[in-house]
Length: 442
Image 1 (cartoon, one colour):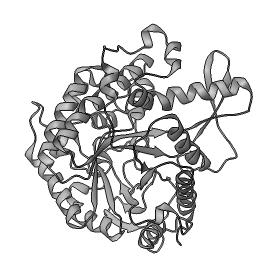
Image 2: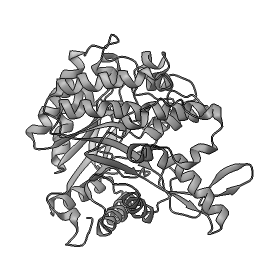
Image 3: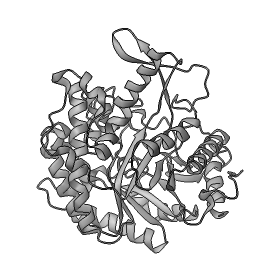
């Protein structure tokens, strides 16, 4: 029950960072001690979350954080990736909420005392609801309010943070939240998705100089998710479809940061769907990065379709996770190599990778061999990318523990630690034991 890599692999070097990751809304609970956010509103809207659940309690991490730090430490990881809840640390008037700030200071101090590097994400989807009421990410002003939040919280946290990411997965916030509406705030209009994306990337660019000023010794960057696009056949039409999908879902969020432009397919948008871009926006977005976080779970296959640029194809016979996502680790290597060839990347950290599986707790054990297989294949894929010249400095398993899985509620389990939501009992799964063994073998 362990992961095996070639003895010469960079992943087995002590300098390589292994960690586990979580997000505030998914684990903290204690909703009564913070401002409402867009996910509270979304959860309270009938039919939006599959099991009708919410994040009011989640994993009760807000109250159980000390035992969770012991749990993280017991896994032997080098780092822990967490996110700050904007509505927990800021009042409506834009001043800091000392109670919320002190929660994170206590957590960070405990991690540092155990030699665990804190990787902090400033935005993992939980926009304060009062900002959404004022337009949310469709309102350009929100980008400047994010800069202000980033400024105040990074000053308050001082030198406790090893790494800051401005945003986690702008694609999800903009496309899933504003373009197709399956995530909070649940709006569904193409122009909304494109405008939200633009303002989020602008907010990132505005915040980066603030992070470099307030926290000059931390690694400061952004986390992007990628779902590589493959053509169904080698026909020119299918290849074009896959290229257009890749630009729309993947390159849209990285090309502005490195090349100061949207992909060529921007020209295919109708005028009413194009975002409003101000002079100098791309210059702001191109703020230098200390690192790029890459999140990867699966690939998507596309074919040409009448009347639209591309159509997604369900690979019916392929192995899949409990989310219905194809298990195709070669796409991970292909993605990392292609990004390395396309852009002048800073050091890369794999900030999320993992799988939801239909776990069962039997006699105190979760024997998740399917997840162990997933991790084995994907750690090998990272190793292969490094062998092909990609500079990768770390890998974070998603997730530390089972938690609120957004629109899926509590129906899907991604953790390497099992959570019994009725008792809040944590049990390390066999995949977690294997992860600990790998880390300890370096």
